[in-house]
Amino acid sequence: MKKHRSFVILAAVTLLLLLLSGAAAYYSYNRKNTGKIAYIYQDDKLLYTIDLNAVQQPYTIEISCEEGTNTVEVHSGKIGVTSADCPDKTCVKTGFIGDGMVPVICVPHGLMIVVRDENGGAVDAQV
Image (cartoon, rainbow, N blue to C red; front, top):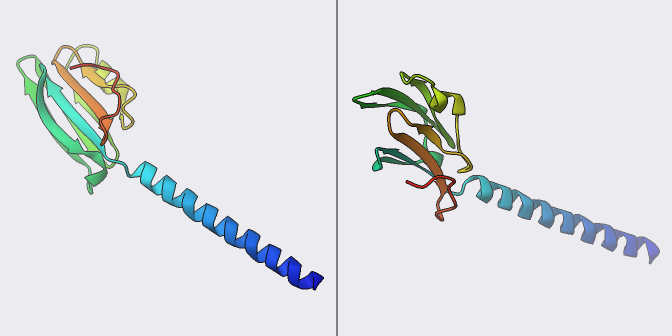
């Protein structure tokens, strides 16, 4: 009888652990795959709306104005300016973004890139 009770307890604990690990994996998957939407503005005009989670292959976008050009690279889950002919290159130094915490801004070219979650999550900069 004692052996049977130990087996039942062990089976119950194993089942509980399997359920918890499955729930954790499901939560982690859904957290990573919530829609990350990148918005690219120039002079307060929306140029591009990009679902970063839908990106299969990285690609670049050239954005030009009278003052110069920015090269924007789009990857799965992140976006950033990789080349610019502005004087300080702060937009390039910002690196890639993907969480909405910090926008990429090129003041001389009037360029701003922000990332929001699909539910319209908070962004640090206003357009």
